[in-house]
Image (cartoon, rainbow, N blue to C red; front, side):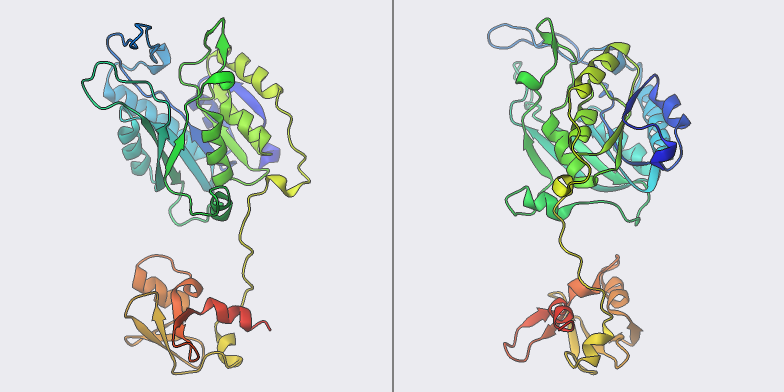
Length: 357
């Protein structure tokens, strides 16, 4: 689909109009940082009496909640149009908007995979002392079609987290220092996101060569990080000033060589394709032997043809597992046999490897 799609470029204009004009089913991942509709009132000052510059840009102003909902419905529908059936969408927001966005997302048929809490290590303080300091944003990660095969580089994220399973709370600083774009000492964009956040989003849910689209491109953080990681990118931005800033920023990024595995996430080697009945044919399991489902008390009996029999029902290790969980189940990961030598329950996965010897 990339041959029909102009990638690695910024489209200047309204995101809804431009999205509708792009080829259907052509984008792997959307990252959206829409207006939060903050509706801030009054000034905020630090202890040294310096004024906090709020997000009060015209693009963040909506007359009513209904106007914001209508806008959200339009751009999410347009994103749905360009996403592949296997595609996923990320959207970031605060308590001002994320719950409204989440409901519309679900109403449109997206299936939420995770909500991520981005804990800001250096948030703007709450000087008035009237409520808790707002120190986090929320990201919703959703797939276009429930049950479709989507990209999640689990092992790559685990590798980057000191070989520990990465959780849904991310502690990252806000954009500051040399990364923050400025003009004459002032912020170029009031809501610039840190590259560390986009690095995590892109490495977790894409592979080299995938297309990442950002319908609210701003100063181009998504494009800059995507280019560094060997992904194609598309930005949509209606403000000509931001378009110019983003393009200049991305032009300074040197793209990686695409013939290197350096930018491919660390993924667990795929196990060999072995039919379950092979374990019977090689004598590793026997007809009539019982398997236990995970750590439960559910026991199924192995039939001579490789089926499992559970409460009068017959099916594969995957089908019976799905019946027990009520969700898609990889039986190799969930069924256990009793090892006669140790007396312990072991995963049938170890037998799959033995059957190859």
